Length: 442
Image 1 (cartoon, helix red, strand yellow):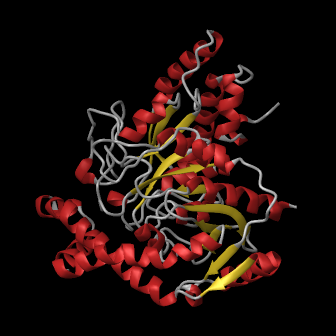
Image 2 (tube, rainbow, N blue to C red; image 1 turned 180 degrees about the horizontal axis):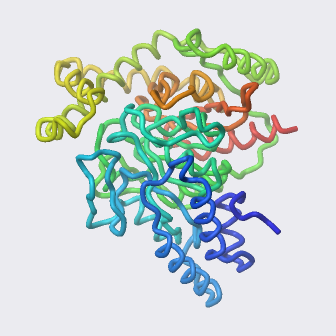
């Protein structure tokens, strides 16, 4: 008998839609897994068990009646606890928001429900989605961090508690936890998925992302969530189904990559440098190296400037009103942001398009950029969620990025491979990721 907790979101959607698997059975299996494991992993801050089971039964009735809701019909999902849900608390990992109950769903949650998904609960985030560590453990080794800030979402998918989950990224909060936890992660093009009802840390950087069990999962969910929202000026027109269609097209030509080490390469763990060296050797003439360290260093500084200024603007009033409710680490980041001049901030914003233009020839000439997803496997302990240095530059540019769980260290801890594509070309990036993964599996 198939263990439904091992199936991908796409597989579950197909099987539930055809009536071969009951949504209620899937939700119950997820809840059983949470009951058995979450005291150790601590991925969830709120689980809506009875509500999810009731919705699953309704989903099963709809299948029998011949009226499935949409492409995610009956599929349970987790939602990061900075994304509003009208029927569950959204506390943002902070005592400042303890007991906060939104009146409305975030736009992304609305679209999940419209696609037929069942919201199983809210997953743990770091404090206000920043670098302050939290209580979640890495399912592969409980003594290690799962990364952050989307800690609970990545850990829940990795541990089989849910097939997919929503996350967010302002620096590296989708890609890095995916690498540490060994799951598939997509930070889509900036603006693909609306951010209405999502905690606003940095309007110029915040991006809603997705975790799943396959490249196809990422495409399926991104398709369901993407498209214009009148209240989010960053959003743009999206044709439903186009990402999954593009991602699953079969091309006979092998993908070509440019390997970008970034200035962080020499600070990466030896196991990362060795693993990527072997990967580059395996790819042979499919990969060439690009030297863009100076440009990336400039972009990393600009990302930090924008993030700190906008974070200070949004969170500063919280610090002033609730000084005891904000950690010392976050308080310092807020104060650092307040010291940055307006001139430096606007220069950082204006440099973004110039820097992106310098990468356009790379995106035209290669299928994707190949680079590490993190400095190494998940660090031991919960004192740090890891360094976003391999992620923040691409967040700054607004390019789509995907983590593939293809590598591991000698102890079995996962290490992700990150692929980066051109803006608004998420489907092509995911197709490249799928072909790349298939090639390495041969």
